[in-house]
Length: 121
Image (tube, rainbow, N blue to C red; front, side):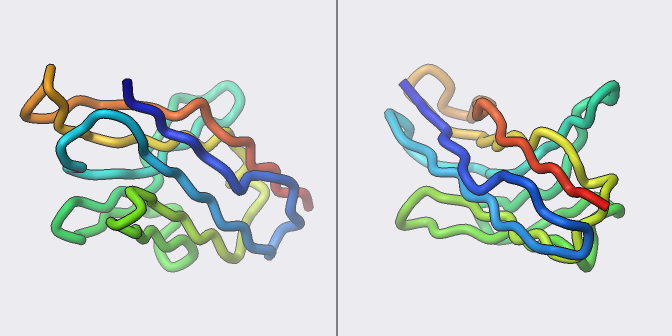
């Protein structure tokens, strides 16, 4: 079984900062990529940022320059540093991991349960 456990969400004022963490545990051989998605009320889930096994990153245009994704490979953990937060960043943030497992050697998507980030004006 694979688990993704997120932490770090909460309430913050506009202009403030938060740091999200997501730790992967369980039976997998390797991590192909880890990332963060978010879903605001009434909207579709969207990519926020992703970091591949080689270290390359990709960000949504709306967060470029404000959010930074990083990882600690030894801890199978990915972080999302969010600065200059805006009211429109309010959403449930979901951790996603593409993991190579015994049933999916090429990789398979796993999701965390989500953590709520609320940015007040």
